[in-house]
Image 1: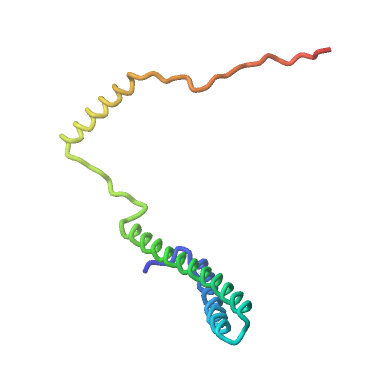
Image 2 (image 1 turned 180 degrees about the horizontal axis):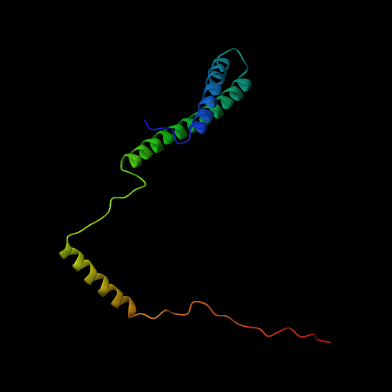
Length: 127
């Protein structure tokens, strides 16, 4: 894989995953103990919050993997340079003729006024 285009963010997200994993396991284990149903519900609720966060972090990491792969493909394609486009003389003449036609067509139209300026005189005192 090409270099990670956001290595610092990836490090941050992986650190969060490392922190969340034992918390989730612990909450899931705790919910299975002899706690009251009310406490078990709160524990499961908190575990669900952490699992949702874990899943969002993983989705972002997966997205970063896709971006890195696309970035590598873009670089492999020669980005940012583009190859020069060239055509045979006869085709270039045809392009020039098309350009002349398009310029003639554009000249048919007049530019409509799109703004209006109103000039006010110098303010005078009312006294």
